[in-house]
Image 1 (cartoon, one colour):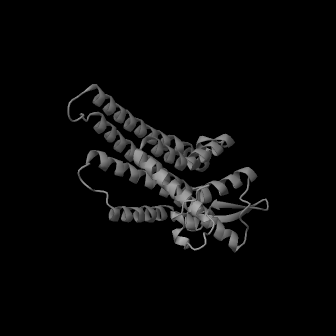
Image 2: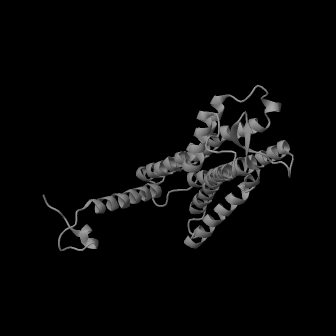
Image 3: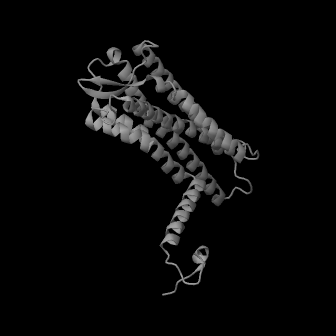
Amino acid sequence: MAIFGMMPTAISMLREAHSWVNDGPSGNISCKFFLFSQGVSMACSVFSLTALAFERFFAVVHPMQKLVTTKRTRWLIALIWIASFASISPTLYAAKVQLFEGVPYCIEDWAPAFDSKSARRIFTVVTFFLLYVLPLVVITVLYSIIAAKVWGRRTPGTATQVNRRASNKVKKNVLRMSMAVVLAFALGWLLMHLNLLLMDFSNIFKPCGIPFWLQTTGFFLGHANSAFNCCIYALFCQNYRRGFKEAFKLLSSICLRDELAPVPGIPLEERDRVVVVD
C-alpha cells in the first residue's frame, strides 16, 4: 500500500499530472503496472481484513475446534492473492496513457473493446460492492456475533467480584476492538469509494467538479487504513502485541549481533553468547 498506492497517488495529486509516465511503450507498461498494483494492494488489504474477521470468529465462537491450521492458512493466503489479482485484472487492459495538452496522463480507457464511459462506471460499481459493501457487511456481522458471544458468556467457577471485574474487562475489550475494526474499515474506505463514484458519475451527481479536499482526504484515509488496523490489533489483542514484541526483539538482536566486533579466537556464530563486562 505504501509503495504502490501512496507514493504514485501523492505525486499525481501534488503535481496535478502523472509525471512518472510518458507517452512511449515504457510509459504504458508503467501505467498498467502501477494502476494494477494499486488495485491489488487495496483488494489484498480488504480480503485480509475479512479473513482476520473469520479467524477471530472461529476462535471465539468455536474455541474447541481447530479450524484455522497452518496448512489452511497458507491456502487462504494464496486464495487472497489470487482473488486480488482476478478482481483487479481488468485494469491491465483499461490502463492507458493519453496526452492532454501535451501532458501524459495514466487513465482508464476501455475503448475500443467496450464503451469507455459505461464500462468504467460498471467496473467502479462492481469494485465498490466487491471491495467495500460486501466485506463491510461480512465484517460487521462477524464482529457483532463475536461481541454478543463474549458478552453473553458466563464466567466459570464462583462468581466473585474479582472474577466479574476480569470478565467485564475482557468483554469490554473485545467489544471495543470489534467496534474499532468495523468503524476503521467503514470510515477509512468510504470517502475513497465516494470519490471514485463521483469521478465516474460526475455529470449526474456533481457537475461542478469534485472538491480537492475530498480527493486528498479520501485517498489518505483509504491508504492509512492498513496502518490503523495494525494499531487496533496491537492495542486490543495480546497475541498481536506479543508478536510485535517478538518481531522487534528479533530485529534488535540482529542489529546488535552485526554491531558486535569480532572477538579473537571465537567463531562468528558464537558471538551472541559472549558477554562483555566493562
